[in-house]
Length: 390
Image 1 (cartoon, rainbow, N blue to C red):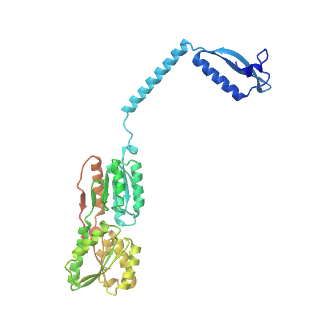
Image 2: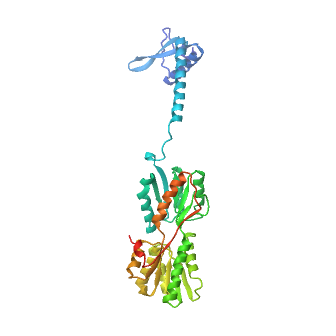
Image 3: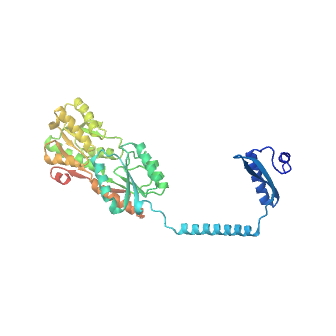
């Protein structure tokens, strides 16, 4: 028995001075544990309440011995716990895997180049309209021409463990690491309109942009021969940040003009691929060039911005404009014949979007595709413009 405790007890076994409650609890708990384990006696201290406070201690000598019944109960508890554990493992193994999305729908991550252009708006609408048909849950994000934002969106899709990714690459080189991360995660990636220069993709679905540019250049060459006597000052409003798509359009346009010795490209400027930026840029081009015969823009927002600048400067009727995208707005202007927008190149966004949905389904089923799935561009003139007006 604790010597300090013994001295504090009188003959009746009642403490004259109260012990610290913390020390009491530690002593009792420790002694009980030791006795239970080793079948040895220990001193058990209990309190008697006097005046509402626990200030008097009773001391009793207690010996704890495990009984046979207790041992049997312990054995049964161990057996029951083991049986339940095995049963839960069997049930878990036989249970079906949790669905990837609500109702078992496949989740498709889509990151758009931008929402400011009619081209991308049309594709997004097609996807939303057909999502139920294919059993897809669409997670659509807008990169708004920012590679860093698009990379973050790709990382989010990977973390969310989507079933497939549709990528409109803002930067063909900058998005390579994100595509490679998706490859490591086993998520198929389909590029649409904007390809990437590395990583593994199921296929690229988009317009043959070089061919589209060539068609525009061919139309320009014929117009210059027939209407301008083979001579012209030409302006190109490009967008070099789009290193594959828009550069291909410009190169195709120049290819269509080959052999035109008296055709001069007097200015090639970055129109920003946006209407307001293109308008500002072309205002400066107009100021620097008193004679401009023809302008080619890499998309319809660019060419419509340039037309607005020319209209404001009073020079719109002296210049022929050629666009690219085939938006309903541009097609309507061509059809009406009230402006000098003479031709455009249609990309067929509906067809591209529908093809992307088909490829996503096939890719998830293990089907393989060619590296490129091209969609042919169409030259829009007054003869067929009504087919592109919605």
